[in-house]
Length: 360
Ligand SMILES: O=C(O)CCC(=O)C(=O)O
Ligand SMILES: [Fe+2]
Image (cartoon, rainbow, N blue to C red):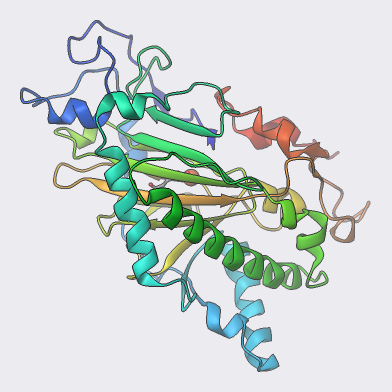
């Protein structure tokens, strides 16, 4: 995920007894004396906090129409996909066929993972981007100089499936969940290929989805005594092609649309889907990678699960030649291997800026 620094207010790192020892946001919240938070938290200018509930319904796509045998229904939903990818870069997916019980089981497994004793989670604590299993926290003073109100687990789940071996059963249920979300993402990317005017299997082949890179990210946002002073995850875009997200009905995700921030209140059992940087590159900017962030609250702990679906790590991604016209729409991104692109994360600058070409 590409960190964005716009609007960053970074206060100096003070000595604070709450954070000088190794801890996580979860443990911090559970410490009995916590009534206020240190000033080391990442926050944003007050004028950037503003977010509203959408005055129009957030777009909804019915997956069952995409897989329908009726060609009229399919072509209608492909038109809708083209519109939502261009206008929003975000939609809710309903009738996707992934069992509600599986979605719930993987959310429950994530909760149990975060409930493990701190030492057990810390076995997976890693700074290295390329470690396939990584537990992290927004309050790791060894790594961060400003903090987020979030603990997370990030795991590479495809083409090789890695997973923590605890809590019991979490790996199995997540393996099944990742397989199902991968199928949904690939089907959607077939529809999106057509929406771009390309052949149905275009993205599948060009991005080598058979070996596509899939990342499972579980985010824990414990309740925060001063939610107005902290951010769960700051504004960023996701690096892959499509991200499928679910959450435990607490709310907190905000997306940027037409320069404004909107609260997302997902429909029960839907997937929240956003287009990522590589769809923006492949479509030569026709579809934009949507900026989003997660705020925190003082009432309940939120868990979200984001599964990012990208090209294979060795795929060199560039705008589809079919969508590039030297005169009217020249290529606006330089070709880059997905693996190399991922190394741009965490230098504070949006990753896409590194490959943007200035068109004269
Ligand atoms: O928690 C959320 O709603 C957003 C999470 C997210 O954007 C991510 O993990 O990339
Ligand atoms: Fe994200």
